[in-house]
Amino acid sequence: MTQPISSGCSCDCASTPKKKVLLYACSGAANVAEIADHVARQLTAEGLGQMFCLAGLGAGIPNMIQTAKDADLNLVLDGCPLDCARIIFQNVGLTNVKIIRITDHGIAKAKGVKITDEQVQKIVALAKETLAAA
Amino acid sequence: MKKLQILGTGCAKCLKLAENTKTAADALGLEYQMEKVTQIDEIMKFGVMYTPALAVDGVVKVAGKVPDPDAIKPMLK
Image 1 (cartoon, chains in turn blue, green):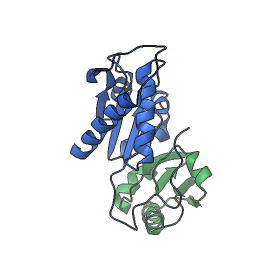
Image 2 (cartoon, one colour; image 1 turned 30 degrees about the horizontal axis):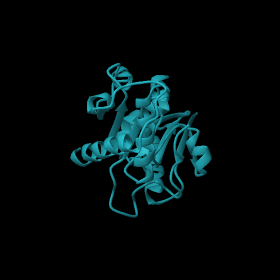
Image 3 (cartoon, one colour; image 1 turned 45 degrees about the vertical axis):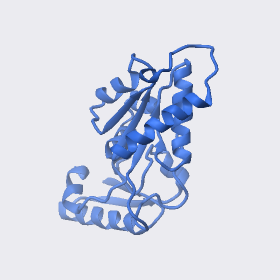
Image 4 (cartoon, chains in turn orange, blue; image 1 turned 90 degrees about the vertical axis):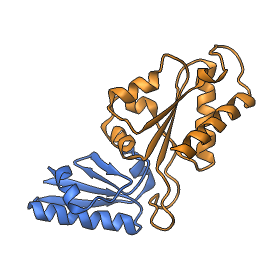
């Protein structure tokens, strides 16, 4: 489903409270979705947030919507101007959202092409800037 | 009877959420059963990413925060 909760209590009681950042990736079939997925997983591995389930929000699963509502920030990696993730968040009425649209950053949407690490790192860097400014 | 579940592996914030929830439920005069869910795989089934969390009759009302009793009261109704 999603990344597992990190071992031990995920409360911030023992340390300086961290922002609760949830990360969502476009779930489409094109290259931009694959890039979004890699970016979200890398940011999770680096401890900058926790990848969460866009499909769960789209399905209207109440517990998952509540989790997204209670996050400090939901960082959304939309693939293209169809803006599926943006619309999902609008539909569930959440506004604690920052959205990055991958095709806005010099990456054309295509199917059947290999993504590059350069493309992934470009969006990782952009995501980090967005998180730092939030 | 309301089923109140505190999701979390048992640190200070989890305990505080349980305490505040009990205070709120008692103030409302609710009949309730409180359970602590501490196993990660069971917590994940609720679809939460942050703990502590409070579920009322299986529905998560808050996750990753410890509201005070007055803020919890509407969640229990």
